[in-house]
Image (cartoon, helix red, strand yellow):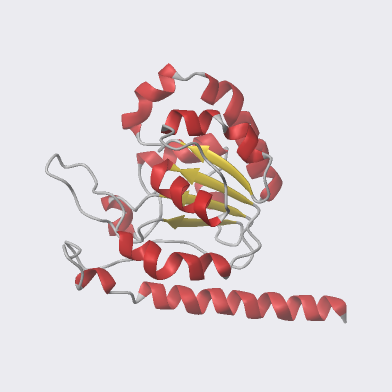
Length: 217
C-alpha cells in the first residue's frame, strides 16, 4: 500500500509540474513589456517532478530558440563535456531539469551578443516553478544571473561584489550545502580564456561535478 501511495503521489506531482509548464509555454508577458521581446515568445526549458539535477542557466540562445532544445549549440557541447554526459542523457527530462533565468531568447545587443535574461520570467514564474520541484538535490548555477537567483532562493550568504571567479572558486563550501550548489562559468567558447587562466576549474572542480552528475542520474 505504501508503494501505491508513493506512486500516486509522484504522478500527481508530475501532473502539477506539467500543468505549470503548459502555462509557462503559453506565456506572452514579454510582448506587452518595454522593450518588447523582439520575436514571438518560445519558452525553452525542461522540467519534471523526478529530476534531481538542475541546470540553472541564463537564457536560450538563438539556436535553442529555433530548435526548442536547451543548450542545442556549441556551448551545450562544452557543458555536456563538463558534466560527462551524452545528448540523450542530458535531454532526459526525468533525470535532468534545465531552467534558464529567462525562458525566451532575449535578442541581440548592438555587438550581436545575446542580451541579458528578461526579468519578467524571474518575477512571474521562478518561485512557483521551484516550489513545485522540491526533489532537486543539486543545482548547477551557470553564470551570475542564475547564481544571484538561486543563492537568494536558498538563502546562501555571499560576499558583496564577489566576482564570478571568486564565486566559482568557493565551490567547495557551496557543494557542502543541501541542496548542493555547484557554481559554473558560462560554457560559451568566449570563456576559453577564463578556463586557461583558471586551470584549477578543470583539475579540481570538474571531477567532482562529473561524480555528482553520475550519482544523481
